[in-house]
Length: 267
Ligand SMILES: Cc1cc2nc3c(=O)[nH]c(=O)nc-3n(C[C@H](O)[C@H](O)[C@H](O)COP(=O)(O)O)c2cc1C
Image 1: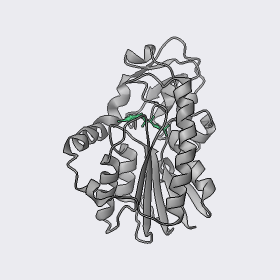
Image 2: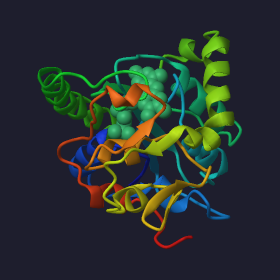
Image 3: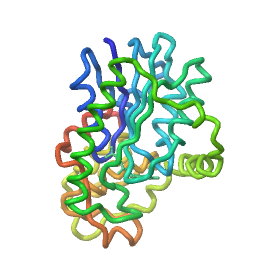
């Protein structure tokens, strides 16, 4: 295998990008981080390694941070990352990955951010349909350029970004990562729950179990928001804000695509 792409996704944006890139590369394997992150040893065996995931609180999701810290990259030489966000452009995720790679005497060769529709409905409402379509069109064009860079093993990383003082953003993201597992205490269901079990099925880290048909969150949440965005009855809420916000997931990505990224029956 030439390239191994490790991805994480809650609502499909990052998976769509990962699939589109993988399709255009020869000999590329897509590996869900949620499937391998708890293994004692994870080793990449390809020359090229990519990390594709959503931006959370200006930086890396906790699961992605912990995974990159853990993975053995000894055999790999070329590293790239693609971060999807709902509008923010920041160098923090690239800086964080570079630091994690440095410990392994490796370095980030290429880094990209792609703006996609917002899934952070516990903070902001979703983008309009028109805006979503614009993001999807632009994603296609960006993927072409990204693939060209990766195929030719070019570097696009200006080393100056690693010298930038991003301490405030790093603190913001570090606090999120510290608290995120327990943040699920804010989830609840309203009277519309039909006990369908999609929330349990879809959670990439098996954080939801149904007790008498009612979802119970197990405090190892990554806040990917798959449960709340895919709930067909819009019954899952987070605090009061989501009573008003709409729901989002990438239109090409199905429940099965999200649920297949996890370890089955791990509870
Ligand atoms: C917990 C959380 C935090 C987020 N933080 C940011 C952020 O700081 N800046 C931003 O532009 N988007 C933020 N977003 C939006 C997502 O990065 C964006 O919608 C992403 O494309 C979702 O990817 P996915 O569909 O693969 O899960 C956040 C989303 C979540 C769930």
